[in-house]
Image (cartoon, rainbow, N blue to C red):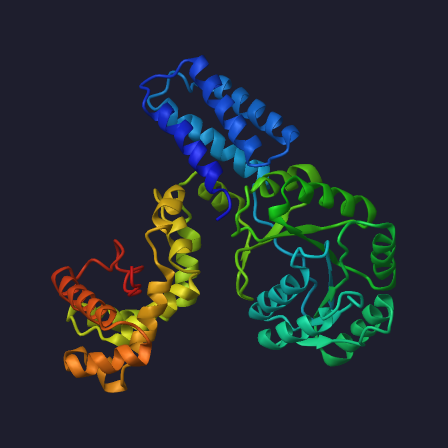
Length: 448
């Protein structure tokens, strides 16, 4: 996950601050030097880091930080506030025209940034919001680009307009607009061609498309793993073509996260969304305050709640909660809870959003055996419907048959069933363990 290294370093700095009852001005300066080093190592632009530290230092000196009751926490708050300000302070939405007009969104970016997949992800997001999108295949150079867009468009239930690879991107864009108008569609997403590097022909083509079709939003797709190069790409596209916003991809990968912290400050353009995985649903609205909270290892409860609400049917959750109280939780319920956890991004994703755990996910991650979870799923899927509904039916011959069906040793089946029974007993003893404080957020039945 992005920012892990930065989070660890910042938490170590803040741990030292918290251990002091009172802070001297030298304590603050020393802490900010360490923060500066951590940001530079995360590949944040030197210019941005310099201004960041200067702003925090001015605020620390300008307030009664050193004489406060908890100066360490005050410095942490100042760093948090400055991170939010750096990334844009407020969440920025795509600007869309009224539903009776066509909004044209042009996707820009270098080859390999994930532009075509992101175009389909964005189409899916807009469809969820009640819009009627059309994807247009304007990349006539990259082999299989059109096919890739068609496959992803089909998965999202969004029409893809294509004229093959023999027509010019400008003609395709104009024809796509006419098709959208005649078909009653109100968002046109142009998937333009990328190159391995920025060149004049590429820029001229994009300018020509903007001249032929009235583009409302030019969205730059940037690979967060390219670090400072991402910022340079944003600057060049802004200068040559003009951009209205940025989508950062691969923020779930092994990236230092510097692009997310630099791109707004350098380009002046907001981050609209972030790609957090390869699935077509893995596109998240960018919230500067939530991202700052994650970076500082303070979790992201709001995003966790939203993911849970999207993944879990409330009525089913309440039924599941009742079954847990009565220890009548069966293998079907366990399978359902595994599915819910996957929809929420997996175990690591959930842990990263929990306050106090965010910065320690790397340590916990090694304890999570994803292969074991897959084996558990195979074991349940190898059971008969009757066995899934009634765990008490299990006997040696059934277990042997299940082990053969799942392709696992009998010991794995025995271990899982024993753990399952222990969980049921625990749930009966602790009926409130799956509830939130007001009983509203519990009952998801996740196999943690």
